[in-house]
Amino acid sequence: MKNEHVGDIILDEKAIAQGVAKVAAQLNQDFDEAVIITVVPGGILYTADLTRQLTFEIAMDYISCPHTPGDRNNNSTIVFHHNIDIRDKHVILIDDAIESGGTMKRLVAYLQENFAPKSISVAILFVKPGRVDIPVKQYYACEMVNDELLIGYGMPWENKYRNLPFVAKLKH
Image (cartoon, rainbow, N blue to C red; front, side, top):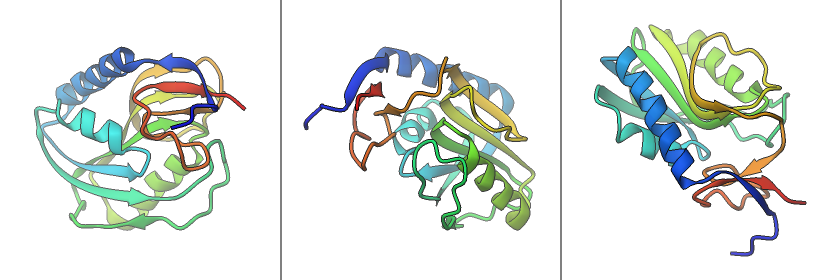
């Protein structure tokens, strides 16, 4: 793999593991049972790492809403596979990060309006400072200091770099 777009590493594998453990501990304290809904494809790596540390009962499903990183006006189609009935259940939406927050806000509203869950929470590795307000509880390990574009650990650039085991700045 060519790494011409990989800049400075922001979160290395150790920092990611510590962040996963931090969020898992918070979720384990707050839940006895929940439906995990992974935002694909970005949330796949984080979901795999996080769910293996959860000590409560979970069911799993997935949802997608393609977007361009940093796009605050994502109007693409939401596809929820709805393999599990979430009515009157606690739902935890898992993604790698909240960058602008526009997509996550749409996903939360879509699930609330169409499927009547008991509650929705969001679990992400990190958030960025310029994000929009999302009116649900958010579990995250760290807050970035700026809104720079990042790649790796699920986050792409031109549909590449999702498989990097770390989070790095995008180098143009």
